[in-house]
Amino acid sequence: MNSERTRNSIDISGRHAGVMRQRSLWRPSSLANLVSTARRPRMLHSYHSYPSTDNISNNAEPPGCNNDKQRQNCAVVPYKESNKKGWSTIVTIVIVEAKGLPDPPSDGAQHSLYCKIRLGSETYNSKTVQSSHQPIWRERCQLHLNKDHILRVSIWDKGKQRNFMGSCVIDLGSLGKERAHDIWQDLDDGFGAIHLNVTMCAIRNTEEVSNVPSVDEVEEKFTFLDFNDWQIAGKLQVKVLGARGLHGKPNAYCTLELNNERVQTPSVKASPEPTWKKYYIFNVRDVTSTLEVNVYDYSLVSSMGLWTDHLGKVSIPLLRIRNGEMRWYALKDKNNRSTAKGNCPRVLLEMSLVFNPVKASLRLFRPVEIKYISKKPPKFHMNLVYGNLIFIRDTFNFLYGLNEGIKRSFEWENRELSTMALLGWLLFWYFMRLWTTPLLLLIPFMYFWINRDNQHERCFMRQYSKDLIETGQNNDEKVGTNSLTSKLQALPELTITITSGIEYLASIAERLYNLLSFKVPFLSYLTMIILVMASAVLYWIPFNFLMMALGVYKYTRKFLDPERILNNDLLDFISRIPDNEILKDWEELSVPEPPITKHSSLASTRTSSNNF
Image 1 (cartoon, rainbow, N blue to C red):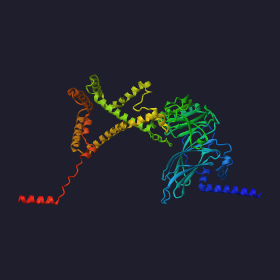
Image 2 (spheres, rainbow, N blue to C red):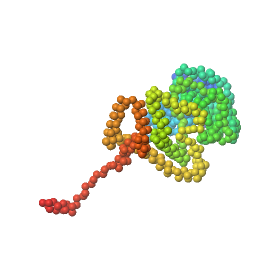
Image 3 (cartoon, one colour):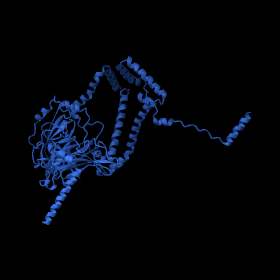
Image 4 (cartoon, helix red, strand yellow):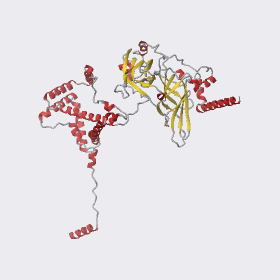
């Protein structure tokens, strides 16, 4: 009996100590604001979404919580009780930013801010960022949901000591599953608000696709003349049916990401041909966005966020989706260039895109939505440097060749070509009017539209190579020693070519600046006189006739002077203007006076006496 009383007293004291620790961390006003949502409206903004396939009540509460006191006791569920049936839902939280935070205490120490999130028995601390009124984290974490639907968020200042900045609570029971919710939540115990992106997805495949709204039902909400919500241009419906040919026998699950909305399917145990049969709806704000589909292998290590085994991915542009078409998509590797490991790995999807064309068109002229979680910057390796150098060299060579081609088009090297160029030039400027400029821009569109069947293998300027795209530490081993040596030997020539091109562009910019700043007054005054004369000529003579005269001049000067050197008049004039390096060479040093010595002074005295 005494031992039982002692054990009970220890349990009670331990429970009391845990409650006291929670009270010191979470202010009573936070819990009071949580359980009294009917008394005061909270600032909870989430994007409009259709009802989920899961039947979730908007005001779901844990059983037995009928009054405020019982709700406070039910707010924290012990770990053993919440884990009897295992986790059923995973909650993905993106800590984006906060605003309106108070100033940290002025104690002379360097302060930083971090965010603490707790759901049930799980706690997550974000990385620390520099203290400010609007800190930005952009960090993702995953917690598990069971009976406790209360998400507790607090912001702390870290200096000489930890300082509480504010907290808030969010009832996840009022949020629909299987879709993202963008939330700005006011801090109850402080100033400011915090921006979160919350998504709840079932991690157990308990239900198949059912009660899916048809495309016609969704189209009714995005008619041509519907201008209610300008932020959302349409809806994307995706049915993730299954996958085939995956590498090994993974516990495969699939993630779908559209801009800042990310959902996750349940994992299927030990099967290279998993079947999910899940249905998701995404809000479309930009019809030019891309749906990213990734397949992973679920394991204990990946659940802890330490490592994820990537099985394949596919990027699907929204404008290439055919509504209602069930289609297999081949999975690629992480670089999105070659096929993933496995026996022709593929995923089966059925998608439908419905959008308002007026909203979608106007949204294209607005800033692109910034992703909360950006991709990691590429790691430094030899192929990255080599590929960029080749690209810059090819760009300079293309511009040089274009300039040479323009200069030769009106020369007599090819009389037929020069004659046709002159006739085309004269006809063009004779009929040219300002209102025809947009129509002229349609010519390349019409050309490529007529030859659109042959455009799949063409690309402009930049060519992709598997050797240059592959990244990672093992890349140099795959390429081989001979290839690496040849690249190292070619680097000096590439570097000299690129440096010469960059110096030439910088020299032209410096020469133009020196012309404007009267570094050579004669050239500056001459330019001013030419501009005044050009203005008078443009006032009296139509611009079309001037361009026709220019074409005749370009065409006949080679005929009048066969020994003429091919040149560009404007660049030749700019080359007469000095750049900064030439100006430094022109700088004159002060002429020093010779030192006066005793011998030189006596000689000068004798010379003056002889003169007398």
